[in-house]
Image (cartoon, rainbow, N blue to C red; front, side, top):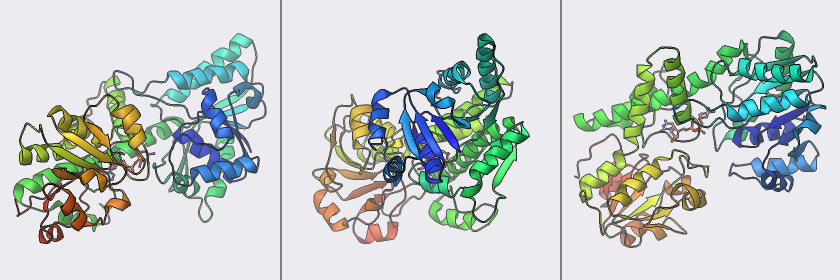
Length: 446
Ligand code: UDX
């Protein structure tokens, strides 16, 4: 099929490239000229394993193109995907200005019957707004062209997005038009080699809601487990054991019950807030969803609190080695990363920070921690340890999993680890003579 994907952010770029990989002809559109020029040369603006090679391969195969000009491509295309950003507005709701701008452009330029797909995460009712916006433009032009707006939310995980797209757990298609549903089914069928059961079709509003509910459910599991971790510490239980104990029940399962420093990223924080807001707009007080958010905000500072308990309220003269800045491994994304909040808290109290992350240091230095004084970025994880009073692990990158603990002890002023992702075994740490703090277990050695 001939596809146009509007918006070359995370979702748009991954989706467009994967559709091209599956043999479709795809044009990705963006208003950012520089970004498009780079993409034409195979330079991608984000770090995502496997994506750059796939973009280059498809540019060479002529299945993937990039352009700033939407109207040239609309005429040739079967399906147009809207994958522009929906930033969080001041009141916590999703801001639809970019989505509706694109809808207007489509209405202004379309010449043939078209399926328009909302791939951006948008609140329930957005497809109707997109539809109305396009219709208004067509009426202004005095033309009557058939079009249908479909909701096809994205469930990609950063760091594993290619795999998620090429071998999806499920694809949700929300459409109130049978022909559009069938066309979408044809587009996605090649992604399901064995069973088509996971291609789930439904009405538009239910599909729009599904995305928010999936993310809110996963965020709820994490916040629930973080709350349990805090209670475990108080009652002398070990959350790592409790996690395995409950996960063995297949109704609960092992995934997304890892306690830590809270969830971050571009989706969970924004989507939980937006769902709460949607409920409020309809006169419903979503208490559970509000608590998920509240627990997460608190959890981001639990590790900082442990540092303060150990070193005192005033951290002047103290230096901390930070391992990991990204909100999770395999990405350079720092949106809502716990590291931002923890570093701010420690710096405000006078501490100096020596940080290392395999991919996110540029993001931190030039954007998220731009004006933060007292933060030094180091070339390696071991470089952060020199003259530091403790190491604080915040992102569970593989290279942090089994470091040279002897080197760590030699370099640190005092052999102390605060582990915000429960990566190490507390018994082994004690045997090695390391003072070790983690989430959800009060340790015997302090
Ligand atoms: C998430 C959803 O997984 C994806 O389906 C959706 O499309 C977008 O949002 P992503 O934000 O890339 O994807 O990351 P994910 O791997 O889901 O992790 C989100 C956050 O939860 C991270 O900060 C992670 O550290 C945290 N997390 C995850 C936990 O704290 N504990 C867990 O058990 C799992």
